[in-house]
Image (cartoon, rainbow, N blue to C red):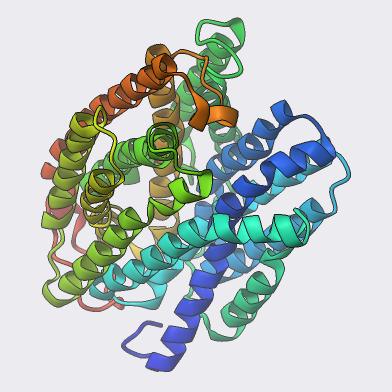
Length: 490
């Protein structure tokens, strides 16, 4: 079932349900950030808070490929409903937490469910509308995400101030309930291909183990532990060993959790690498621009967060314009090329301007970065969906989501290490507006080093997408996206 055979009103309602299903997972992280100090005060120590974030991020990345495979085998509608239900139950339990261990465990469950929400929802869009329309609809998703990123911290602040931090989790329930109703009644359920081979449980365990080990190394390295500590070395070595074992397993599995032939398709491989690099570069903005603005322009945390709005506006504008153009022409390669070029230029501009603090010039740079970023992610997802058979949409979306998650963890680790090496460890978030001139200068040098590093990362992403071989987007979702195409897209 697709847009050409489904009434437009039904398509819109089903799409709205898909967006609502993803929204709790997006809002959860942005809302929670504001509440973390209060949660630490009520349930434990401030040093335990990192586990609340790490548990969610790690399990989300580790579970993503399994959700994608199950969606392909058992039906994306059914698995999306299951993952959303699990997320809502975990949210309710998080809200009743009486100690930090309770909260961390349920956050891990919530993260595992979130991995399914993001992957299956993106794949469900591929089932709902034709390939040419996917760019436009995914542009709408980007708008919703941008708004959630801006509104989330404000909602979190209001809930913590006027209600309780527990409502940070309870607020997911009404949104999720509305999404469940929309999915159940309006989302079509395409037929799934019958597979006799059992689920690749061994591959799933190896993938989860390697992902958890490597992501914990990225999250803890240079923060909780030094990079040369036995813990980090063991995590990296263990993660690499499990990854090697995974590749060996997937070569002989009847129905692998990570189909290596799928990753050898040029659009999938190139898009995955480009999304990894793009997300890594993004962390230079989302993490270090607020820090820079608070340190150098005396912005409050709320003001610093709101000063990211220009970037969100840029993302919204460019994503929608690219989506509309793609639906009209069926062409897409030019957009990630232009987008990564703009991202590189914006990061170079920020590196040059950092020694001369100004909210205005920073905002201009952020608009340029946002215009670029908006032409990359959703466009590459449409390219991937256009290159694989519908029966493998879930697995393909899992691959792109997985590499995004790993890219974010690696970017945060690398850029954080570079910042610490330049700025030292004397800066604390408690007193960013009251630093001495010497420490402030160290922070400026650290942030500048971050942008100098992030610019080549974006530039490498540009070089990667230049190798993308464009296959015009198909006009009807009835045509199997991979039919007759593999030779052209390898």
